[in-house]
Length: 327
Image (cartoon, rainbow, N blue to C red):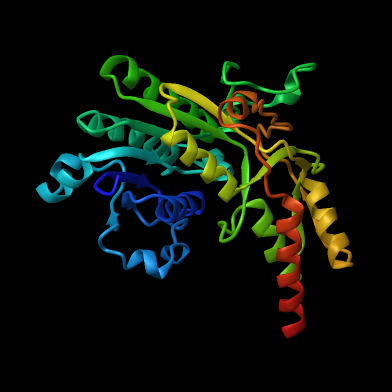
């Protein structure tokens, strides 16, 4: 394994960077991190020790939509030796997709096609792993009596974001059928954890608290989401990558469900203060409920004990109190 290479795209993002850490700490794989350094990228998410380990870590500032065949021969040679390709690179901000869906089609669809077209020539490739989302299943609230979505459930995306992620899945499946590209697709619930982008729900709440600002709540705030610690998600992806699973889809969920307003109220209670909230117009096409059926993954990998959202929030609340005391 010491001479084997893994290519990880979007490795400066929230989840991608934590996955790189998981690979670095738990394997001997050589890592090539491809990231175009958008607003969501941050090199400091990766440890200084790892970034300076030139024997195992290499960064390439590139867009996944580039013509990889125009890269220098040495870079192409390194990429085409990949045993694993894991694609985290994506436009993910749902609100932005409503405003303008074209960048989402460019990265999430054309970018995936571009990766498949290039890496189908990688002779050592054992798995192409496409990181997807529970949002491809659509709003479970629409389906009275259907409590959860398993991997065979119909894809019913509601936003341009989730539609492009569903489209990417179909491209991956087509590449397997036509070009024998071995793949895995993971559909993961909401992730929480350190160094998440400030645009996301939980960081936005704490930013508002620290700035003594109103916390925006979409509609009635009763939208229900499943939450999982980013490291638990990355560990599951890593186990699937090394497993015998091939040409399949796997849901990755924790079973921990919370309504958005419940999270805000929990934080307020732990802080012992009345938080300032403002209910804003609901997002267009906003899904009310996501429910993953995680049975296939648990039966394959075994049941796991996941880190709780409450535990993470308590740590963040403690840091917020320290911040307030210093202020």
